Amino acid sequence: MDRITAGWINGFIGVVIFSGSLPATRVAVMQFDPVFLTVARAAIAGILALGLLLLFGEKRPARRDIVSLAVVALGVVVGFPLLTALALKHVTSAHSIVFIGLLPLATAIFGVIRAGERPKPAFWLFSVLGSALVAGFALGQGLTASPVGDMLMLAAIVVCGLGYAEGAKLSRTLGGWQVISWALVLSLPMMIGASILYRPATFSGIETPALLSLAYVSLFSMLIGFVFWYRGLAQGGIAAVGQLQLLQPFFGLALAATLLGEAVSWAMIAVTVAVILCVAGARKFAR
Image (cartoon, rainbow, N blue to C red; front, side, top):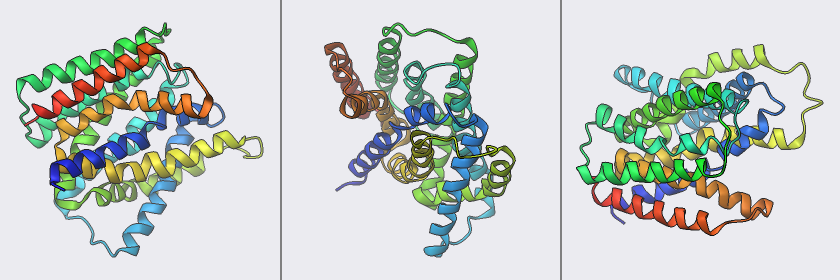
């Protein structure tokens, strides 16, 4: 298997894992404070990451990598989880699909700025079209707007795109799982302290769905998903593989249909096919 194909496979696995993040966050913030949810998930994932680094005897990152790791931590460990958790207090997870549709475009832009990638002009056509299809589909569902929620989601997309591109760039030399692990460890002391400070007075009233959602975003969204995602971006190209995120909302809808018995409309299938074609087009013209 060549490096590019491996990158797309790893990226695909990462996107599938991430597809459950926003619904799980939505469930969790119904009973957990958004700030506590953010720091707790990072603390749990950070402890696991520290254990992995010690288990495999990984060397400390070079001093020149610390700034990049800090950008990754601020973008994907703290920034995106906190901003989306705050936003989901004002908007539904369905409404957030509008903004998730912009994430591949943001990732591609930062891939150009931070990693020096130069996709062909046709790539941007497919990327913008794919983003417009996802956002248009979400808007067509009759979603209500919240200015506060929208601004928070927009900020989340910007910092996440930066964190994805910076982490992928660093993964080329440091390794995919090592990047997210060191970023989590770098922020671990602060996250543990904040978890203690913002912890609920009691966990006795927290129901099982909220606890399971916390476990999911801690283990899968914050750690395991990034192992595949950063590896995929580094292997297949940030701008190109980043377009797989266009499929994330539809994976989430598919999960809802499978687990919750929700109906899947013909319009949803048609838009999904169109988005897949956009991803294929973006891949062809990414280099």
